[in-house]
Amino acid sequence: MSSSSAAPAAKPPMRDALVAAAFQLFLERGYEQTTVDDIVALAGVGRRSFFRYFPSKEDVVFPDHERCLADMTAFLAAGAEEDEPVRRVCDAARLVLRMYAENPTFSVQRYRLTKKVPGLRAYELSVVWRYERALAGYLRGRFADRPGGTLRADVVAAAVVAAHNNALRSWLRSDGEDDAGAAVDHALGYVQAAFGHEAPEDPGAVHPRGEGAEDVVVLVARRDAPLWRVVREFETVLGRD
Amino acid sequence: MSSSSAAPAAKPPMRDALVAAAFQLFLERGYEQTTVDDIVALAGVGRRSFFRYFPSKEDVVFPDHERCLADMTAFLAAGAEEDEPVRRVCDAARLVLRMYAENPTFSVQRYRLTKKVPGLRAYELSVVWRYERALAGYLRGRFADRPGGTLRADVVAAAVVAAHNNALRSWLRSDGEDDAGAAVDHALGYVQAAFGHEAPEDPGAVHPRGEGAEDVVVLVARRDAPLWRVVREFETVLGRD
Image 1: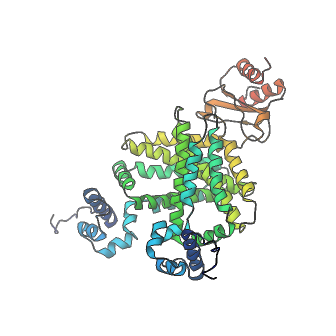
Image 2: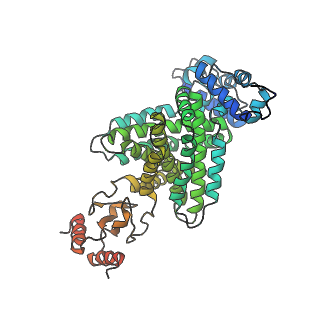
Image 3: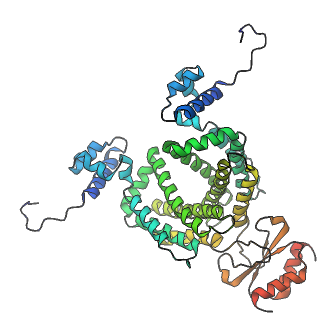
């Protein structure tokens, strides 16, 4: 490539070049056998450039989580009072899946790497924990004036993360071939069915629930309720009265 | 104490002596400022004795988790086919709480230490993850022949761990003064209410759900179901037909 070229070729940002160099070496030599010096030599930059972008070698393995955590936090903060809280955290979890699904090859490579290196597994647990705390923090705010609000917030956040990770791992094990969006919708739908509406507090309350919830009505009634009342509730829900 | 005493004083096992020495130093000097050499000097044993019991300095902070993980695995393995799976994992989680509650002073000291030292926090996350995998592994076995069984297993395990940890942290923040058993019963009761019974899988299926479930029936019906069919389902459930 000539340096006198009128239109210089688009150069990938240095950060991306470091990630690409790192993964090339991790795959060729193994993670443990690759040093930061090896990475910067291949990328053609100095050590200080590496550490400007990544605090440690582990961080280059997960280059997008900080941005994604920031996006998630902003998304939750931008929520409105009308948002159903469990739906909102499910949508926030979808942002993480999207980050993985945007780059299947990279995500699958990293998945294989992380499975092999215990230090990376520990790093990943700390990242997952930060996502979970972001979701729980939002829910604690939303459930603040409700008895048992922090318990509910913590349990729902953990359930959302577990469902997301179940779908993510299925997709990664398919080498990124399956439909990631469909898998996560199914998994999060399960959590929404369990937690997305109030547990029946007053007999006679009616909730859509479960998969394909829009096609289904769920009627909760006291066992000793008179039949006419159950029928009337059902008609009311369906707008048939 | 005389060495010629006829009945030698009961000596705490070396492992306990190492834990005691370690915590004395962690509290006096801080965790980072204490070396394994300091610990063995205070305990009056050699370095090799330390590493016989603990692979690293971090492990001496959590001396009982390996035993507790083994106890939990054995407890789950000893379960019968009749055990309701969600109840069983809740009971398994109670084993962990009991370990903490058996020694409130030690548990509260460790809690304060762990909050201050990021490396210990990471270690603790890896321990929590192992408990969660033990619970999920049991549930995956129990839900093996059910569609979505691994999803359900992973979500319930995460919910149980989150509920347990919510109760544990409340108790630790009370300096071990509150009733740990009552807190965890409340927290796990919430998870059992959400997951302890089958989710409706086919429209028309009827399940008790939630607290006071025995007094309540839940009817799931397609939105376009004819009314006569809904009424008949309801009557069937109640045994009124």
